[in-house]
Amino acid sequence: MREPSLLLVSAALLVACAPDVILAPAGSGAAAPATGGAGESPDGTGGAGDAPASRGPVVLASGPSEPSSMAVDATHVYWTVDDQVMKVPLEGGSPVSLVSGSQFYPTKGIALDADHVYWIAYYHGVFRVPKSGGPPVHIVSVNTSAANVAVDDDFVYMGEFGSEEVDGFAKIVKAPKTGGALADVAQTVTGVDVIAIDADQVYWINKGRQRVYKVDKAGGSPVELFNAGERPYSGTYRISTSDTDVFWASKQGIMKGPKGGGDAVLLQLAGWGEDMALDNENVYWTQWGSDVAKGPLTGGEPTLIAADQPSPWTIAVDATHVYWINYDGTVMKAPK
Image (cartoon, rainbow, N blue to C red):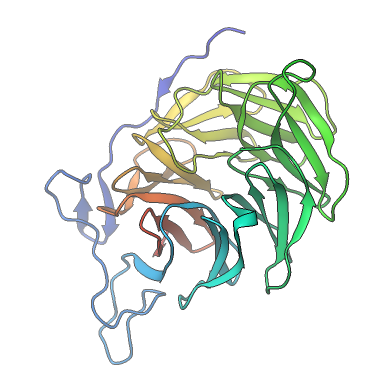
C-alpha cells in the first residue's frame, strides 16, 4: 500500500472565546480565556447574588495526579488514575472512588454502558463496576498493556500480547461483557495501542509500525488504512470514529482519514496532542503543556477553549460541555 500524503487543512490557533474577545495561542502574550471570579458555580452561571459569571473553565474536583482516561454520561464524569476508578457529578463536588486497590494497578482506559464502567488493569485483565457503586467484577484475564478498551451491546474489545511464535506479537480480542472466554478478532498485528469501534468494525493504532488498521468485529484479516504518523510522547492518546471517518491524535496534530482508506489529512496542528474527543460537528483535543481546543470535523479555524492549563491530559464531551483532567489531577469543565 502506498504511503498516504499529509494534507494541511488548518494551522492557526486564533479564536474567539467570548464576544468581541480574540485570543491567541498560549505564549503569544495575548490574553488567556476569561474565567469566573469568586462565587462562580461549576456550571459557569455564577454564584448566588453575583453578577453572571463568564463562560470560562471551572474546577469540578481535585484528584490524584497522572490520570489515564475519562468518560462522561448524563450525570457524572468518570476516570481512571493510579489504582482507582473515580467519579464526580457533572455539577462538581467531592470525587468518589468506585474501586481502589493494588490488584487494579495501573488502571488504564475507560468505557461506559448504561449501567457499568469498564477498564483495563495492566497484565491482569478487564474489570467492570456498577456506576452506582458495588463490588467490581473481573470479566476476563488478558495479557495486555493497551491504553484503552471499547464496549458495544454484547462485548468488550481490547488488545492482547500474543505468542510471537504462534500468533504474532499481539492481537485484537473480545469477551462477553458479563464474562466468558476470549475470542480472537485479528491476529498477527504488532503492538496494539489504542482502539475504537463502530457498528461493524474495530479500528486501532499499533505501536511498532505506527499504522491505522481495521477489522470486522466478527473477526478476519486486518486491513491497513493509513500511516498514523508519530504518536504523542506520552499520555492518553486516542483513536475515534465518525460516521464516515477515522480520527486520531499524533505528534503532528489531529489526523483524519476515510474509513475505507485513502489519503490521511492533518486536520489540525495540535503539537503533541495528548487526547481527543468528537461530537457531530467538532473534534476537541488537549495539547501537552498548555491548551484545550476544538476545530470543525471538516477542517477550518480552531477555537481555543482554555489556555495555560497545567498539562491538560484526557478529554471528553457531552451535548453542552467539554471536560478534561489536568496532569495534576484537577477535573475541569467548560462550555463548548
